[in-house]
Length: 314
Image (cartoon, rainbow, N blue to C red; front, side, top):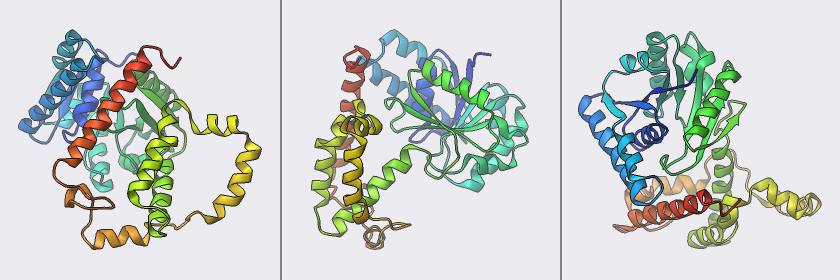
């Protein structure tokens, strides 16, 4: 059965973008928050994102307008899930809170597929209090969700693969690039890769090998630039696994394998250097810099998507 009605909870960083994506695919979307005024504010965010997509040529103005009209607000998640075929949760990253939330969703609807946008909490644990855990999944949209193609569909220990296939088909219909994560492991897929890199980047700075600024430059001007069209295994196979082994035998013994946050990371936190929110982290963040970086990021993604849709990388 085709999924035509969706509810999305959470009106912060992710929910409005997820709602916009689903509405663009022709589906009716209810955006849920704890209060109707914050739900209405979330709908306005979704509509602003749709307008931005139209202004940048990623969708037609008529599509954006029609999609905006398919998004409505609500303040009762149980009522919303009762009228939906799919529910996507994007509330706070707190396991007990999510368990309670999903238990109530499960009780309110015996049929809806229940998904969490969690970036790392075990979906098996989130579904632990549900009577039908086979229909509970992670659908981890990457930020910003209205632009980033990737969505990780994570199966819990009891998830039904046939339902997972339906989710993959739905996400492709939304123009996303879904991947199926068959094991419910910490960090899912992308974050496992990303945090392995972050740990070594922090280690490089801690060891005085390079500055944080030069680490960022090496990523952006090096392998990061080709990453959208040249994956890890494409690279290793093209270089040759024998050569990759030779490099790894030399390099890997020197890489950091600390099982938790590095001392330099903890020292930054203890010093109140939290990043953008405090004005300083590994880098300095004067007023306006973060917004400039976000604009640069979004512009790059937009231009890449335009080229991709024009078939330039086929």
